[in-house]
Length: 395
Image (cartoon, rainbow, N blue to C red):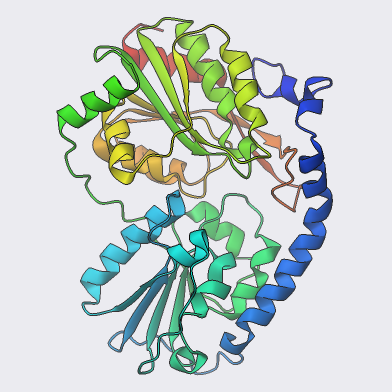
């Protein structure tokens, strides 16, 4: 495979790779197997009072008291996905008891146990590894007989072993993609897995003035062709593959200042080196911008509305909420035609799926404990051609 096919490749090779292997990164990588075992033990101990010991006779109750637990105030795609589900469930279950554990998960807020009558149906709208916090919001006696439904999103073909403890805590799993569902099937013996695409609503109209104001804030001409990519690479940059976005844009448009890509990107201390790598790729080109600032939901909506194209050359997606949201806006989306978005994307006329080939998982952060799987490397040439076609500059 050439560097043109995989723009990240040169940063994985000596001597550039040495910049990634800081003492912090090495320490994290070496400690991670031990930390995962400790987390597994702690999660099992914390949720032991809530474990389903016997599934015999357990049946869903469609009419009883409903409770919804989740992370509804975070700034991640998972939080927004949970919020969309919550809004839909609230319409189906007026008067449902709802608890937002976002402040506890993100800010360390205390969790109070909410007493009350027994719950018949419990929805868990956050990642399984947050269940120790979620369940603490309810005394075990309240949900002992409750039918429990977990919304699970996962982005690789292999079920994450650190979620094993959660299999004893749910009666039913909702997966927003068949891609994720296939990863759950081998381990979820006796647990029904329901395919439930994320209920992204029709987006509210963003006033043109707000979209223009976002362009002005970013110092992008209102008549410039604007591409947007939004990604959180604080844990695993390789999955979101920001290098491919920069390479495809420059391949399509060179340094044309009338064709601007904004990469809205969130990093951590360990992954901050990626920003330096991207700046090295960008060089003096004036038409690729890195945006680190945190944005509110309204500002994200304005950025999406300002875009002429949304770009996502990821290697795998558990769902791809920004992709779906931009498609719902009618914005052309150029995305790797792999994993979850390959399922819902073709239903939209604005979707332009990019062909790919499978490559082995490689990631210096060691984010995924199971290294023996493959994910997608998008075709750079195809991505550049699609970008030029959407921009109206020919093939």
